[in-house]
Length: 84
Image (cartoon, rainbow, N blue to C red):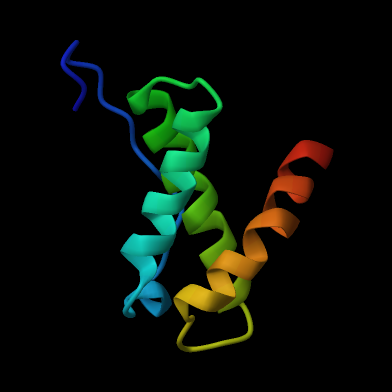
């Protein structure tokens, strides 16, 4: 819930992502968006979606997804989103 009362719901992510380092990867993505000039709220929203989407793609073929795998999947996920 944002200070304005707006609620944003993320449909991405899965239990396979419950492993060490995921928060570090998510924090890095948020920071990258903030560094590009996005507000903290928008950066967090975009980063959570992107992070979860990358994890969802990886979980199609795995029971457990590592933070390292998610970090490597982020550029591919961005390209996929931009193409659609």
